Image (cartoon, rainbow, N blue to C red; front, side, top):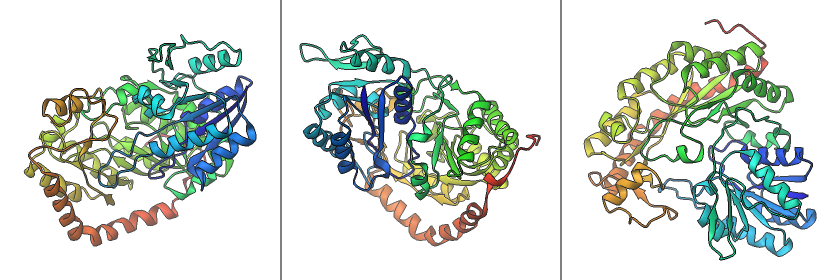
Length: 452
């Protein structure tokens, strides 16, 4: 079966190379299908590129991965859905093949996505086996409508969502990198994404990771993770990698084991990751730095304990300060992006976060206002209870929660004052870290002992 698999994401800010879409393409290719993979994130004219690929390849199945519903920030709001829908409509004009949708955003809004995009099929979840089974049934001319995770229209026209499961990537072979032009991702901080584990058992009020990636940790073998990094290193094309996890340092011992294996195998590259305060120690900081750790994005959404508790965070302000100091002692750069106006926010706690974000010593800090209200989350329930949204709101249209005790205009005014006061000092603070990353060449290092 001829299949065109397209990564529709064109939003480049903090976007590593596509993993899910390329894994699907690699799996279908391994099953014997004739697969063409297209990555819109590296195309100058994405719509034109997809239409031309569909016209010339004439696939029998069109697969589209949709990563984001929107960019989840009101300040510089971006909605990719109209652009993607227009792209699919243009493809329809040159290729009559059925469409199969997937991706994280599709798993969050399957019915809406199917309707807006006008697709015949969709798939929720991360398990490659059911999607491979369904595509095989399509190729045989008898689509298996009982496939777990399948989203489709019944004969009555009603959209049916088959139950799906999240299995993680413990047993997945990452043979997908040859499908992606990694050299095109040198424009950003990193060129490739590597998964060390999936899932998140935390209970953050605003987050739906439990729905899209699972409520429990699914850990990959540290030796396999390091092996993936080594393969990327040996291509000679990859210098920097993002460890694609919702907090790489959790669980802590697994993260340390991954770093030890990187050192043991000589798989050092410039590493970036998300860091969750509360689970770290000096051994982790030292291992991370030696394995190539350049910087982390610290998920410290607030510097006020009452707000952290209201948002369901498992760490405290004291732990944020402790871990930030540990990262800096180890020479690891930090980026902070606190969001003001969350549950429990007051004027006092907002000012505490503004000051705390600066005092933490991060080389880059930016503040935003308001949390995107997502379905199935505690924040959604709170927004309904407070009358911010109606009980029938499915969360498709972006609405943002801002605490009633901190008007949005007041918060924005405080952020502007903060930037006027500190912008020039922030630039000077960033210089040493920028220089350190520029001269750091961990990919030139060979195997070494992980003993600290």
